[in-house]
Length: 434
Image 1 (cartoon, rainbow, N blue to C red):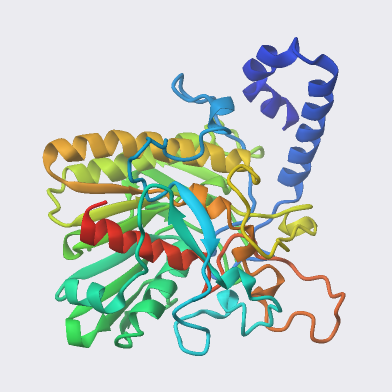
Image 2: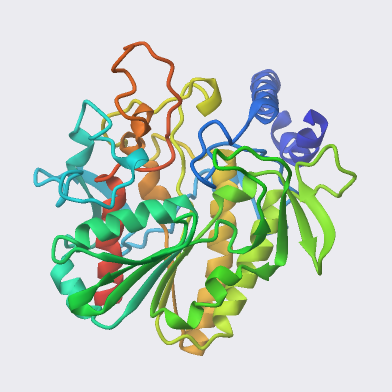
């Protein structure tokens, strides 16, 4: 395993070896040992909800194409800032005495694992910040104005559990005007639809963690009995069958790609990501993610869709002092400044692939008159290590023992919380064309 990882980093190691031999050799050795421990003990079942987004999984990746430069990604995690140009995704979190527009008591759509206040989180300072783009004015989301604009329209959020996290926030704010009525759910409540009757406006969430066809062998608790079988050349019909029915869509993916998987093309095994017991070619998760995103964007570009489509980038986790399985936690109580928190190597790779693929797709979409937009929340989310449930994904985790050992959730977001700012940006992009 370590030999494989060393091979992937060989070219990078040679370029810096002569600069500081002893320090770098020691640091890199520690990195390899830590990564090996992570791969050896990583399991998604301990903390998974039903088919939940994993916090940590296998992190092998194949050698990237020439255009991919890993060392540069560490310094360029977001869109470039141009002087005087409005970029909603570059800014700072500033104090907001007004606080959130809803609470866990006024919104019934918050799921238990994100209901931090109900679950006993003792601090509330994380609620009193708002996102402030540096060269733009970003109004607070106006639910009445939004619903009036969306009369007879349809929205869909398509992706994994972060999309589900987001739709809860979306519904909570909109329901300040009129409470949404659930009109559909599948057997497992993974795909759901709500209606705002007075406006004939529907909001759907569609469970599709890979955006491609995937056979996932996990039970209710997320315990895997076999490797995921991912068909990288086949898109998930759970969203393609409904694609033409939606006026607005937000696609997202990424986190699930780091799980162990066997890749199929034309119904034939092509290779895999971390399958040491199989005699398959190790392709790496970055190969599969780039391939599927390309297929998703090609599908959109050939669709002649008349509405608006967003692609949301993956959000980082904020585990410190370990991973979820080794005592990692997220105890911070306020945002950090840009640059104070680093993306993990996995998130750097995911984000680079996303920016490259959406960049190519938006250029083609513009030529075709299609409305495809990047929704890059990676950098602004990285500055909010205080916004996760931590141990308070569980109800009153320390009620019986203040020193109880509790697994932390440092990936999903408390509600209300930082994710509410995403709606402010969405409204600005939809109504004012940012």
